[in-house]
Length: 216
Image 1 (cartoon, one colour):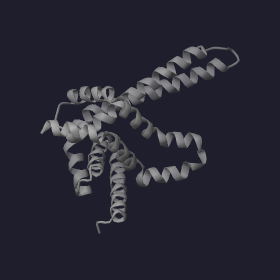
Image 2 (tube, one colour):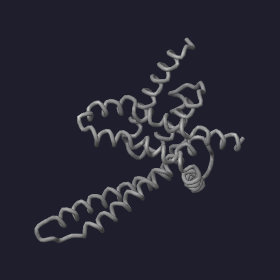
Image 3 (cartoon, helix red, strand yellow):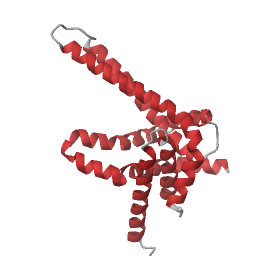
Image 4 (cartoon, one colour):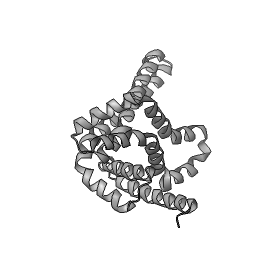
């Protein structure tokens, strides 16, 4: 029962359970921050090959971090809504600029504004990939967590970029291979979120381990 094959299948089954729990907990939207934190807790322990009760660990982290996660998740939702509204407005402005009357913003200005929105989104996600495991493993105020996450995002820029690339893979696959939409959808429902969380945990493990040792 301790063979590599059995461990691989056991880990895959755990990821499916974590993925389903996380997706269900994300449905209310407001609880998605706590759900992602719980997912990060379990996947990091899996990356460190720690034996734990998957459901119990996930639920304990979700329940314990629910209140604090709302404090940082709500601003993230607001920023996401603003970015979505800005992209919608820029799309309408682009259509207006291409219309017969020539009204609307110049293509150059539109490109600059889209670039700024994208850069802002990357910065937010870059901080989030570190904020989530910090909340999952350490006791601190939200402000301190955010500040520490920003420092980690910049101080370990290479790892941050790798995490961003990993998170962007599903979107890139969908854009490049539209016919894979159904298969990708099933993958994300059954395994995707937890699997991506596990890959991110592998990238961040050494940094988080060092922080945990320093905190002891």
